[in-house]
Length: 425
Image: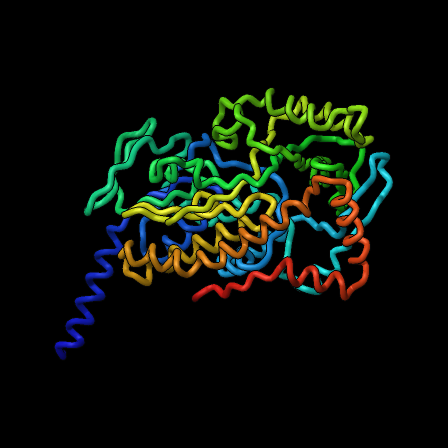
């Protein structure tokens, strides 16, 4: 055996030994965390998931899923399961206060632009499909969270809220917009949150009297709008957006994860924003929606914000998904970007044989320019999604009516769905 082949054999043995002992703690069991765990596991690492919620989160608002996220899901063998769990939304309808249709757009443009590489699915159903791939193979700690982290040249010592302390080779924060891991890494966390001037809310209810199957129906007034869509089992979901010039001071804590959050105060804010006043229109369906809001137990409520960090890692600790680069909920592709970022991060760790310094730098260098373009587009799109003026609503209605012409619709959809990122193998 030649010296060169001996060295190659030795390098392989060293790599195998290195990979077998590489344990990676992932904070967050939403979209990014389980996706990262899946790809790390396939590359010989030992991922461990930790999630503050006492059990896996179900439900959530509906998202459109295409582009880089679809590509990652396809490589994970998930498309069939996602189609089974998904919904057919074949038209967008804007209605006036009295319920009459103002404008509409069909899904034909999406189909012509994306073919069959597009689906609509509840965020929780997407997360569940991903997690089901690793449920039996990855240690998952529910009902706990990271309290403190201390890193050195050998690893990261992690203390938890409830369980005994442990040491990991790396820690990855995949814990969303209000990331605890990011807060531990960077001082003045608020400086990295770019508030876009809106809040959103979502909830679901049973036996709502109107269904409009396969339609995403929206009432909009200046600075506020309500959308509804039909779910299975005679359930209906509502998605609410309203303008707020500044962040609401009493609601800037961890709204999505804190089990002690003031849901009553959040419901009261929504009532104030949508209840009738002499100078503003009220949707004819609002009284019934308000009754359902009062009774709901699954309210999601949060600011529309982006995260813009100077770096996505520090030493042995890195961030992925919304924790690192949240594009904002109104961008519509946060889940897709979370999956793509997780896929790339795992691939770079594998390519660098676990050398985190090299891998983290390559992950950010490869993915950050794409994310910055998408964040810029999302900032421009926010005002179109929920116009703040009557003129803005008029322009949006006009664009939708013009979209009945195939060449206009195809142009708009090609611009809207252009991801411009080819995933590495």
